[in-house]
Structure formats: C-alpha cells, structure tokens
Image (cartoon, rainbow, N blue to C red; front, side, top):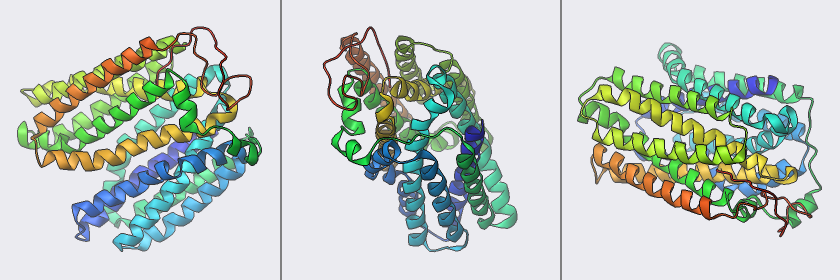
Length: 405
C-alpha cells in the first residue's frame, strides 16, 4: 500500500505539472509544434533508454534505483518551477522522462515480489485505477492552482510528490537485488524476450497499435464535440470523465480474471470495444449518444491495459521482468510519440468524423489480425524468458498458456 500510495501521488503530480507546463507554453506564445515537442520529450526516453532501463532494473538494487531516481526527478522539477525558456523546459521534461523510464521498469519488476505471484492482476488493477483517478482529478487542480497562483505552484506540487515517492520507495521492505550486470548483458533484451513468446509478441504489438489510435483520436475529440456536434465545453469534459470511469470499471474487472486464457480473451474483447467506440464517435448524430459509447470504450481500454501488464509479468521469468517491462513501456510510449504527429497530420486532411471512422477500421483490422495470430500460436508455448537457462532461447514448453498483451 505504501508503494501504491507513493506512485499514485507522483502520478498526480506529473499530471498536474503537464497541464501547468502546457498553460505556461501557451501563455508565453509558444507555437503548437513546441507544445508537441514538450509532450514528446517526456515519452521519447522510454524508447531510447529501454535497453538501459531494463538492464538497470534487472541488475541493480531496486531500493537504491527507486530512491535515487525519485531524488533526481525532484531536482529536475525545481528549475522547472522558475524557467520560462522553451528549450530549457523541453530538456528538463526529457530528463524527467529518463528517470521515469528507469523507475517504471524497476517498480514493475519489483511489484510481483511485493504482492506475490498470485496477486499480480489485482495489484495491476489497483495501480491502473489509482492512476486513472489521478488523471481525472489533476487537470482541474492544475487549472485552479495555475489560475490562482501561477504555473509555478503546480510544478512545486510535482516536486513535492517526488519527495513523497522517495519516502515510499525507501519504506518498501522488499528488495530486488537483481543479477550480476555482466550476466544481464549476455542474456536477451526485453524486446527479444517478448518476440520469443508467440502470444506476447502479437499482443504487445496490438497494444501499441491501440495506444497510437486512442491518442490519435484524442487530438480531434474536442473538435468533434465543439465544431461537428455543436456541443458545449461541459459535454467535452463529461465525455473525458465517462471514458476514464469506464477505464476504472474495465481495470477492476480485469483484476478479477484469474487465468491467462481469460486475460487473452479480455484483451481481444477490449480491443473490439475500443474499435466500436471509435465508430460510435464517428457516427453519432447527437453528443448525448456518446456518453454510453465513451463508457464502453473506456471499459475496453481498462481491460487491455491491465491484462497486458499482468500477462507480461506472469509469462516472464522473474529475472527478465525489468527488461520486458522496459520494452512494454517503450512500445506504448513510442506509439504515443507517433500519434502526436499522426493526429496533427490527419487533422489537416480529414474531418473529425473521418478520423474516428478511420481509427475504427484500423482498430478492427488490428483486432482481427491479433486474434488470428493468438489463435495460431501454439497452445503449449513457453512463457517469455522461461526455460532451463533463464533469459535465453529455450525449446521447453509448458501446458496451455493463452496470453494477451
């Protein structure tokens, strides 16, 4: 509970800081591409540092890594409170992203040891729920603080939450000492481990595709609501909130699924729900119709997120979990970077309805292809990283393990 509380507080601080930085850039006259660069700067380190972050998570003492990355991120937040230079903000956000890449892989690899192997799904669901609640509350708090005291105060809040995370990391008694760094370098990286699993490979690829699609349509949702459906700002806020509530419901449901086969089906069902939701947004004649549609889309989103994270952990050998967590983070955040460019580019060519319908069609194709690859996967395939020599290719097989990413 200490770790979850600390991570949730930090996630809240990150969301508050993101809104504050966006407001500061806009007020300073920054161009849209500069805002996009700032957003991308926090995501790109997850991709570029995936290999390093995974190796650190699997070889170094978890407590030291988590404490010192939190301290470093707190130190990066302090100059952000005062700077108004766009380049400096982008560099500092990138440094925060670098720390987050290492810390996230370490936390994810440590969690199974903290909660126990049988409780991975429930812990993942609790984490997704707390993060989603933070994402709902933080924008309003950031707006109120920025309006009343300026954008420096929300950034100071983020620095304080990193301090809270530091204390939480130090308080976790369970430690993951990892394996010798030389041994980690000789073993496969996270990408290779995921690709070697005939189920995780296609499902992680499917997840990345849906992250791209979801973030791509998120860019044009406000235009669909305000310009196409002629609804007020309140409707836009309501739809954002109902989608998030759906994510919470989907996450809690996913946490109750106790077998890999069930999680695999839940991932595919969630992907189908998200595709249908995209179609609903594209075809809706009235904005009120989108309320139940957004809830269903959010449920699918929650199912996919929790089941992917759970399966990556349960199907991976303990000694490679840092590397596979880093690879998963790279896939999701890399898709986010691509979506920032894709969403803006498509908005110049297509209207909001057409972009949602395109996302629905592409989502349907991804779902069908992923389902076919999962069905074709050999039912007796070994979990990622498992085998007589952990972290290396193996011809060993285990009974029926149908998983999804």
